[in-house]
Image 1 (spheres, rainbow, N blue to C red):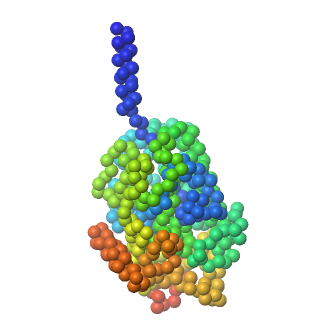
Image 2: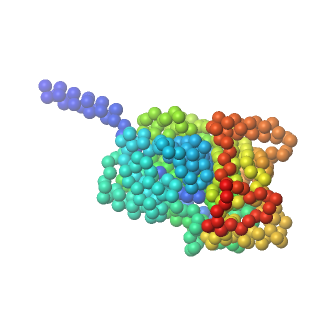
Image 3: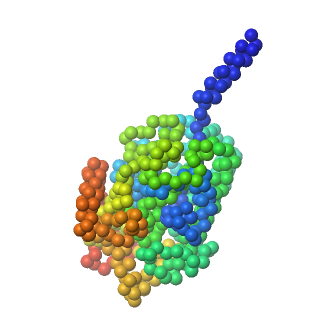
Length: 458
């Protein structure tokens, strides 16, 4: 009789184990204003990012990850809602999400996750709906994470959202890189001031990477192999043609995901994914149905190696940022082709850096203007920054830095028509009216000098 009971218990325990598939703990680490090419995994031979490299060796690198918008507020709102900016409402930077918009933290909470955020995850480091814990300091987050885990001993599964402010400006004053050894994109004007600021930017990247290493160590000690670790950046760096732009240097970002035992280590994928897809993927991993009314879609099959494709088309939008950046644009990428529509080509493209010229941010701009007065090549680069064509078309295979606009080349007329129609159809379907949130700076007038406290009339 005892043997029968023991045998029955063994069968029951075995069955329980077969059906018991504990949810993985989730750790997401977000950097702020990090250019994709300024990492060792995407070709930089100068910037030291050993943690990113280590994570890439543990998991999957996405070579075609895009943001929803290349400025902080709209893109982080897209992360948390799975919606494009025109749908969640926070189109210009520093504007609120539409009241009543659901956050995708709720499905994870409903699935049993304890959710805690540290640093800058939502815009401005604000608390996130449906989370159990929040601390605001956007540096040295590992100290708050350690304290939270020790003092609260939260119930697993855990979802830890960690946001570092670096390499957002203002960049550190003490650089650990030699300015003569930094690399500058070909469309930059090479000045000493630019190189000195570049060295400070690189230093912040390396320091951010070290902080992520500390968070990764905490995850490994706490969770063993039962965790997913996701790293990405909210958009490109605050450099010309980066942040506030739909060129790849602004909209295409690093994305690495490790999941021990599930994701094949040291792999890469060409699958095109968007920031609106990140939380839907985590929700899918939790075994829940991804909401169908959002723009995001799960790429879990890509993580598991079942496919190397996700989206055929990537749309990215930008509206503007206060009075510093009033230059709305829309883009689409299909295959190797990238199309950008500038909605105010009659105006100057501007941003905080060129207007304010602050140390540790845009102080190098004075040297650009000085160089342009003497050097025709520098003047041409400066003009290309401030003045854009209505339409831009790029072959990303032949021209990955998007230096040669093919929109006016008759040879590519059909491709231009196709992609232009795609953007028009997308805007119509999403009721995107191409919001111009403030009064642009017209090209037929001198570029004004703007101070931080000046207000621009709408």
